[in-house]
Image 1: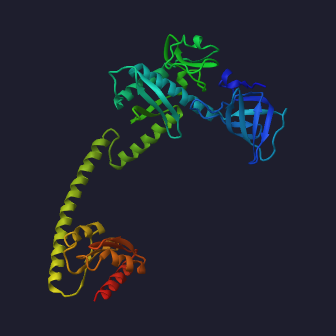
Image 2: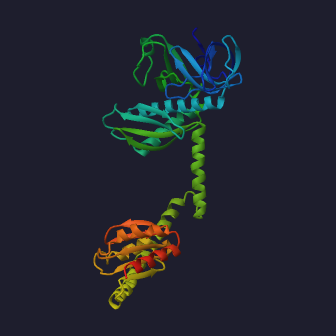
Image 3: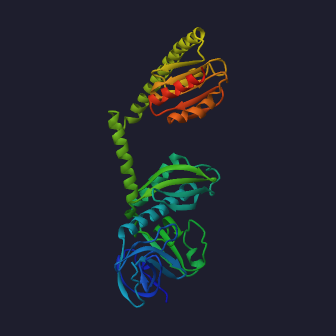
Length: 407
């Protein structure tokens, strides 16, 4: 029995009665159902399937199988029987979301084709955004899509929405009849053809074969917003949203910008200049800190040099109160492979040691053999190594062990 596809007759049907014509129970508490008529759109054309309920059973998935539509439902083990009649209810929010997004894609793809000769070679409706992959094929003078060009396309697409152009679906049994329309892309099928036209055929914003669901007017799309443009496999991938999701995305980005501008005591309009000024000041402070750190490293190195010259001890421990481990490592570079003594440079804020020697003793070997005794970790080579501890007590026990070991 061929199912009556109500979604092809009226996309605004939300409730209807249907008779089970075939059923198959599954072992996971679900069942596959075939109905005599359905408004549940099956997954296809880049669009996710409709959701909702058949009676009290939640619709989990809808797929097309030839001319049939297969509904997967949660049954809790109570599989309905052939001949049972149920009232079906569409999840309208989900359906309308799909309608807005899919129609938005049509409008934007048509605009890219009209303005730049860009052919849509790929379409994906993701959770966070939609993408279309535009191939520049029609106009050899246009070799790229810049962000400015994308903004031009965005404005033109929204003008189509503001015009509230009609969206019509025309169905044809023969290819030659459908090809009389101003199609954006060549047909890939010969029969049972659905053509979606935004605007009139004489002045269409888009006209292309599509099996999805769409609102009856472009105004119901509400909004199209492009987020970014990327080069992708010789094409240009456009990231965008349409409908309620576009509004929510704009609201989210505005809220973030509003909070950031308030943090910098700025208006949104002045925020870029305020941020640039803050970054410039931060760069100056960072440069000043770098100069001061190098000066302090030089001073601390003088103290280490003096101690090397004045002591016969094989191990010198230098406590660095304000140095990070990276600062200590930069200080250690001057001694790597050169000092006959073992230097233990202790970076207090990071409770970590930088070990430095001429290669004898081997620094990395010392860390490998002894750091784990005190829950330390690290490693290195013969002339330098790092030993990192969770607290100063463990770090000092490690240093004491190394000192006793090398006496």
